[in-house]
Length: 427
Image (cartoon, rainbow, N blue to C red; front, side):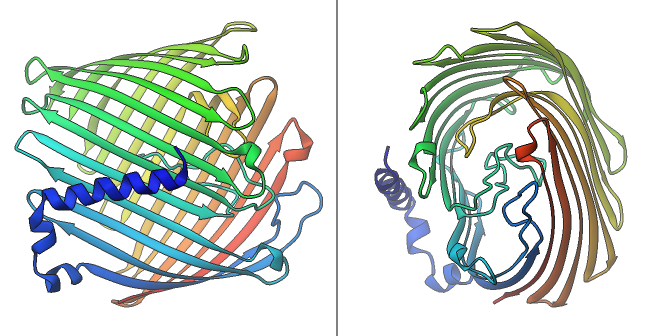
């Protein structure tokens, strides 16, 4: 599907939604306008290694003006949340990189009946930022793709994701989800790729304590300059609930990756068990552990552990999140398409509200990734931020970060320091 066809499809679906819900169209114009909130952000950024070079580090100042608009409304039968901003990006030295960026998101829930919910998510980004945020919906923030855009070429991603859910009990449902993910790189069409993904799921609780979740998915990955990929996957989970906010579970998953014109395909089997519970008021723990088996078409079978430990804490003026996880991961539909990897990761974030209008926070991230056939990366990131509400309609913030990568391939080593001063005014 081309980008033009993709846009036409979105317009048709959105038109049908508004026609189906005349209350959305014929509501008070004044009331609708009141939910639109324009804003402007002025950002000054300093980077000491613009192209993430191991040796020839180049510093630069980047000034960006972001005019944007936010729309949010929530009613009994529907909810809509939309945000879009355009960025006018200007480099002080490397002026050839001057560009216009776009970032937008659209999310809606429509209750077609008491049992049927239609959801639509659309995400678009046009940027030169080398570290692309994970476009998948995730409970963890500040997650990035493994692939890195080093030459600061402009790339575009558009993720279009409609889904439908049918509820036939308090916690019982059938779901159907589709995702079209288009990735394009300006000036290097050989890296263009596209994904079409579909999944169906069943959630069923036999009683208040015993429940199962079963998901099957199928996807096609279309790569411009390499073998296309066909994927199958399934996941099954049994949960036993022994308290209002406490449960244990066992889980099994299988996935198959088949490349049409190469023998780089593989199977992965994974099994784990764990529990979720409230340790105390405001503190939750999610813990699981197991193992996986990676069976490539060529090469040796490898085994490894999978684990996930997440602790979230919310107190009067402090919030924190600490996670340790590892196992296997994949990187496709990206700038490098690094494929299958084994990884270990640690992430910690702490936010402290010093005053009613003053908030500060620190973060730490470390990841060890082993890619096939023999690339090994070690990535570390440290960050500090400070945000102050000048007025109810204006906020000023500062972000300082250090990021580095150490690899067995010296050409992709780098160290980067950056600082960002940001002023946002909302109308």
